[in-house]
Image (cartoon, rainbow, N blue to C red):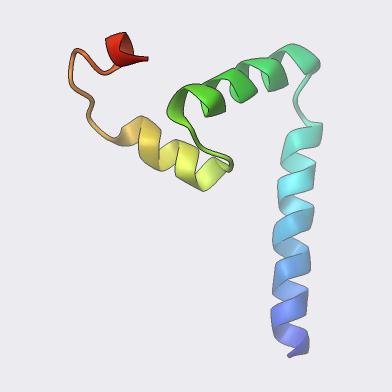
Length: 61
């Protein structure tokens, strides 16, 4: 049980450190990208960004 909690703590600490290395403009740009792809976390964002889109995808928004 402690191993799972330790792993979760390390993962969250790494995510927090990653956010701290960005300035405000970068965070706004990233947030706008999250909204564009309709995601709420980095893993989903990367998956959606890599997925091929049709030409009319952006027009439907």
